[in-house]
Length: 134
Image 1 (cartoon, rainbow, N blue to C red):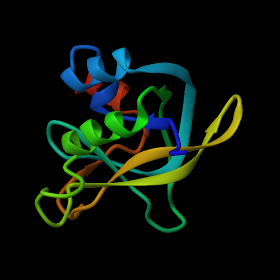
Image 2 (image 1 turned 30 degrees about the vertical axis):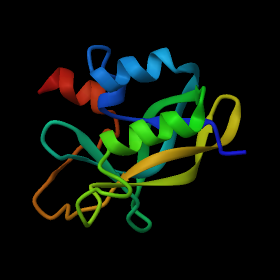
Image 3 (image 1 turned 90 degrees about the horizontal axis):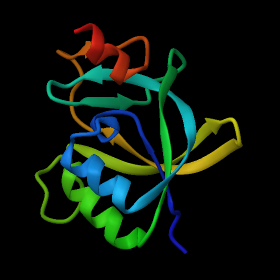
């Protein structure tokens, strides 16, 4: 069985985002969570990279997806990952440990897959709070 847990940390947390609405209709809120990484402002969305020992907590939400294969196909398209997408992929999907109040859960996470050289780092690890302050 395909893992049905998804950790989201960016635009999929914004209620009026088309794919966040899709996720809300096709999944169930599981819990809040965090992962170790670095968060960057890519422009209209954030991206997480895992970069050595100086990672910090990146905050988000875990969802349990229904109809997992279809949900992942739709989300892969949104994230620029998979067959037919521009190379290198914008994001790659990986199963990673997410710390939650319910223990460590293995969740799908979309990691940014392009250069971060000119991007602003969001050192708080909280994209929604960052948007409020911008």
